[in-house]
Picture 1 (cartoon, rainbow over the protein chains, first blue to last red):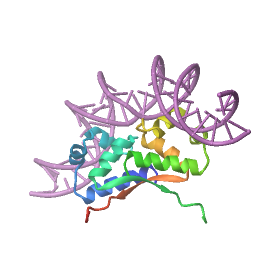
Picture 2: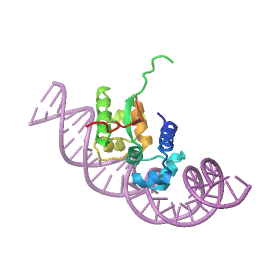
Picture 3: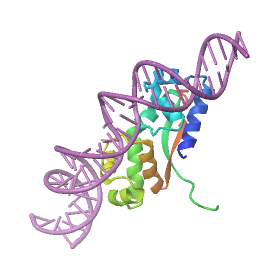
Picture 4: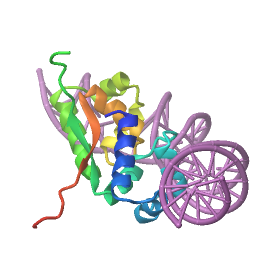
Length: 72
Length: 72
DNA sequence: CTTCAAAGTGCATTATACAGCTCTTTTTTA
DNA sequence: TAAAAAAGAGCTGTATAATGCACTTTGAAG
């Protein structure tokens, strides 16, 4: 999952939950500005920040093995 | 996955691949100091940094739904 | 034990993430 | 299409992540 993909997931999840950036910012304890920066693709959040955001959205940051370059 | 868990996974994966911190630092383009900080639990890497590290280890950062608090 | 490699730490500097405030742009809805 | 809400951006301190260098600690191998 590259950057844009992660952003997309966060945005979609937030929309699905009908939460505004403002609410999410407050609930997660992350600054509104920071969240806006991130969602608009201008940011490079720290792991902590990403975790706070994901947490409120009922998600979690994880590490998984990449698809071993089998075919393709 | 909380912080310690992510660290644990990185360390284990690095060991499994028989890669030293120094090698991983060079390969990933992340400063050796930064990697050391992170692995020793003293850091709060940016998403970019974490991605660089994970990438070389054949892993990727991802977001997944948390286990909905069903039972337990 | 002694040695050597790997991992961890103190210190200092530079780059940049975080944050708030204000304003603009875009999207939604009435 | 006008008004309101939500999202995005400029400006700007403050905090801290990233980095290098030198030194210490730990661990494994002889």
